[in-house]
Length: 107
Image (cartoon, rainbow, N blue to C red; front, side):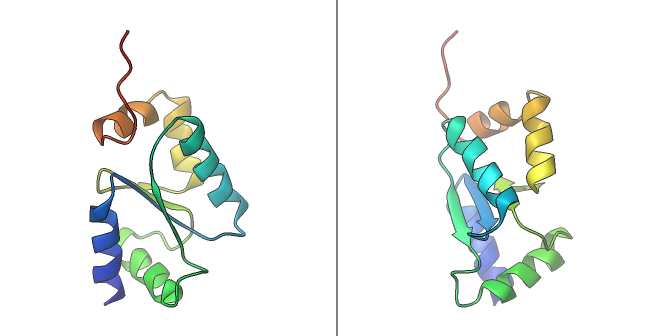
């Protein structure tokens, strides 16, 4: 049940961040996405009645139980380190753009 809900949440938006309100790594990822002008849906697991079950289901599905757990275009990206590394490598914005989460800029 929790796995189905997690999969439905991921497929419902171009960018989904499974997060916890008190997690500094989650705050960093959400701030980065906001600074990049990306639209995203944050699922705050500590505010969800079935948050612990969703977090466990994410662990089974992706191999990552920790938060933040980032999905772009339905694809699992990873956590804070992986998302930040993609940005530093210049790969995050193209992924966000391809997913329709940021407007394409004209050069």
